[in-house]
Length: 428
Image 1 (cartoon, rainbow, N blue to C red):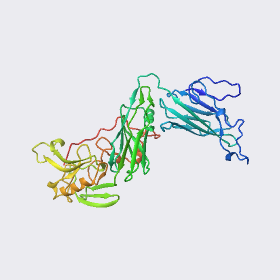
Image 2 (tube, one colour; image 1 turned 90 degrees about the horizontal axis):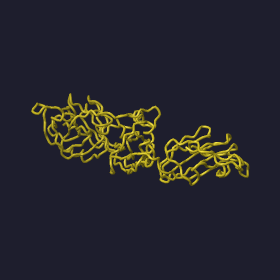
Image 3 (cartoon, one colour; image 1 turned 45 degrees about the vertical axis):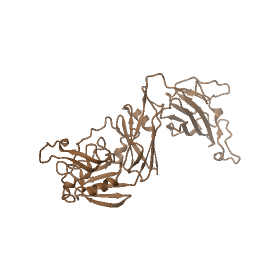
Image 4 (tube, helix red, strand yellow; image 1 turned 180 degrees about the vertical axis):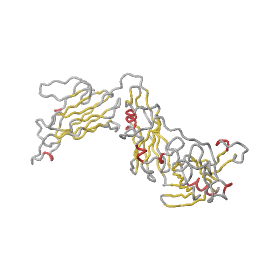
């Protein structure tokens, strides 16, 4: 990183390069910062350009090394830096930290290669007179290494989804180090209209999920993009180009299954629209509790007992085509038509783990929900839905647990290799 100092006299030369790009700002010396009424706070900001000099190859309009951090220091002990913004031409902001006394600012995120930056520095002298300085520079290419490009693929894909649909980010290479994960996570930007707060959670070394604290608003527009291109992640990994994604949400549709009451209730935009008598998993095949998200809708699915370890020909065996199947886990849990158990629906739990209902009700449910809609189960004797690996169980983590999976939260413990899902094959 190069050191850039202001001269202490008219004859002072440029300082030597000492390791980081350092702007030293002389605040207030010889500044006529006060307004005509003597109130320095009402003055127009003075131009601090003549109080900043640059050494080495870094200068206003010059070129900087993208692998070196940026540091700004106030030279006058009676003055201070009040604000710094550093943004490249594509709108990517360099994050940084300003000392409590305003004496120093330094970047906390790396610069991108082959980018043009504008740095705006606001200062204040001992009399309270404001100063300003605008600096532009470009960055060159990275050091000559065999660096791979880290691409990010966002999911689930363009379209309209339910309010429970998480965003996903799949990395082309694993990132294990916490500091390097922080570089990646800072570069992944999510914006929604209406605006909501949310956060990323590292599922494993190559996958992140993003969700709000609560479900997305109905009829929202959600966009996600990566600002990693050209950014150094480590010596052998640098951000590559990634395609942004925009999705939309539909109505707020939430289906609540009460396994003890044998009833599924559907709410649309917080209004109850239908109650359906159902049957859920019987002892030994209990339906998972918790929040699930619709993964797919399959008009016809073949379900076989051998996939859940039931021997062919036993009293529990089955092999049948099932209609109007709404999938909620990858291991084969569905909400589907079960005409063979209509007599038990609303009274008893007799399925092998799925939520069964009449063909008429299953068709209505199939036509009403979309991918990303929320399906919850309560009062079952089954385990709780896994957060990852068997669908979208993300909502089964409370907000504190979710935030603990971020590399940007102090004291958090992002997951390392992810969790193995306790998968069960297709059931009825």
